Image (tube, rainbow, N blue to C red):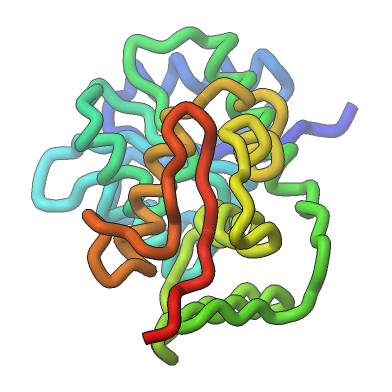
Length: 235
């Protein structure tokens, strides 16, 4: 039987590394480990894992957020942050750094494996593209084919999930898309009720494309319903 994937565990706690290794090897995954955040990005580049489990807190000046940002400079590999930090601000920092998912300690092994499988499935399944044509909405331009986004002519770096979310909103611009539609299209059926994910990624997306994220004029929220990407009004 083929392995379902190769997982790199980045954590400086040997006991946690052993626990995670046992969890994933027992379910058929191949496991790589890294105990130092300083070596993580290099190991990702060399080993090309299918998914990364990344702790946040490390001794010294480098943390998991830094590691995530370093990896995102050259790779879109799925990253799950696994940490004891539970505040919403910590989660926002993780997603803003480029993480795809966030699991808190203590964790349920079966849930963690399920999230890993869902992320791998999404990573290996291309989202259906309704149109490869570029989308121009005032100062916002989305080039679907090469996944490039510019605002007022300046290129904006988006994580793969942020781009997929913006693309889906843009393909249905000036229409309200429900929470359930967006979660299913971007994250998959397993995330149908995880509205916190959607809210968090909308927040990070607004920070990158809105002039004033606290008063957005591109991504509009419809409480209890969903979101819409609207065509900016001409001055």
